[in-house]
Image 1 (cartoon, rainbow, N blue to C red):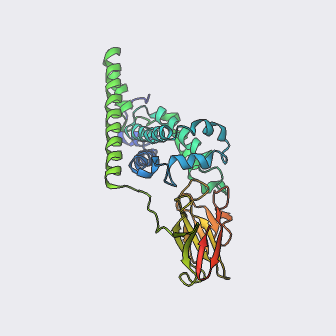
Image 2 (cartoon, rainbow, N blue to C red; image 1 turned 60 degrees about the vertical axis):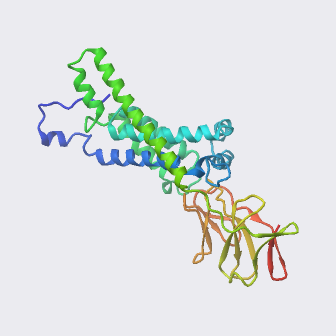
Image 3 (cartoon, rainbow, N blue to C red; image 1 turned 30 degrees about the horizontal axis):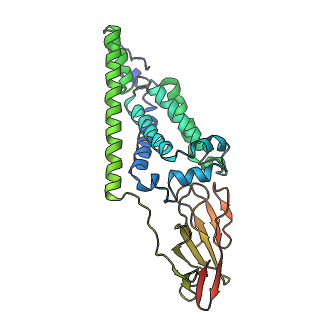
Length: 315
């Protein structure tokens, strides 16, 4: 619990206490974790097994690539529960940090989440300082030590009233403050999830499905895509997004658009002839699918194709 600031301390002296210079960092962490949790709850694809960005797909990709893959394997059969607990946990950490309520405990939980994400999502990021999770882990450490340090803090207010109230009344106040904060956070989380699903949120958008004929899939005509460009399509075998590339040197190549790091859909960059993941910065060669930068542990899945006259056929 945070200690109360002495009423006899002058205003300039109070402004030099650690809680004030740490306040911008505390607000950043609180807002970021609250937003991260609410964003997950608002995204219909987060708990949709068919979405390439769902918690289901992320667990499947992270189990073989993470140093704690054994633990993730135990959780893999329960993706919805894991996903909801992560989102609600992030909201709880953010709200507790912003309010300065159970501030040290919130900071410890925030550090635990950051460590978990470091060992999973950011583990393959090279060099290490490109990954944000290691930075978040370090940023939580001062708050584990001092909490909100008495600045704009419910913990500090409770500590002050505790000196005048009987122990039982103080405990009731603390319980009431915790309950109100939890009720507000859960209500906001539930409303966010409902709105996200009502308006569609970040629902997965599928590009036009290629034409299937006689067990094969016509993706494009050879003259439809000029050399050095690419066309996005849906792989009818998996329902996942994919890219057809007309190579600058001639010929075609097709790849799954699902990033092998955390399951986000990669984008084609014509200027660099690369695929780039918008989530964590993985880069792949557009000619071979090989990893050329970022945290991805494996190359993009290459899809078999052939030319049938003027048609490019996958499968």
